[in-house]
Image 1 (cartoon, rainbow, N blue to C red):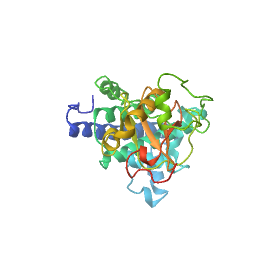
Image 2: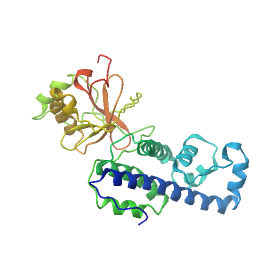
Image 3: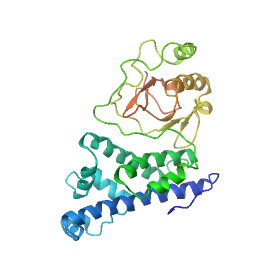
Length: 282
């Protein structure tokens, strides 16, 4: 176990463990890439690559920020080659989308853009876990150990180019139909249908209780907007019983992860949502 085991009642310790896990990903991922490239390109491949541009003169690829940005933004990078040898072509877009999610998580944890709870730590672990598993990284051991100590929300999954989406709503009329009609219109998109619109910078978590939390400041919708929180939460958890992370577009489309993509969950107006998060009439 290469990580400190946190006291889950101490936000500072959870934060330190999350940062440690992200840094461990950088070390394990680069070691895996380096071993493959040394075998194929020679032990001096990195020296030669650093000479190819002044940008790389003192570049440290063990830094997860440097490594992930290289993999995501430099299409010609030799560091991509070992990954492409392992990940099937049909899965490569989803894999790199997952790396983008991890980079965003890294920025949240490094720059204190979130509240560091056991739930958020589990989400981070579950976002990292598939990368470690698919590439055979040692950090899977640390992830397994930490997961055994945690309860939390469903992990984010990467959005792929051609996801399989629901053709009909995932829930038929039931006892909560009256609650649905309080917050959504009679005609709307199918639950789970791909949402390709650009999301606002906000990020939320839908808890199993139906509570909706702003990830940045930990505020609950029931605190910020009690008039609509209960009925909206009833709708969302009925449609997404596992909970998980939510995003929102500028026109009030709420999206959650459905297997392999951001999918439609509901549509909200500014007066039903967190104050100052939505401004356009929907």
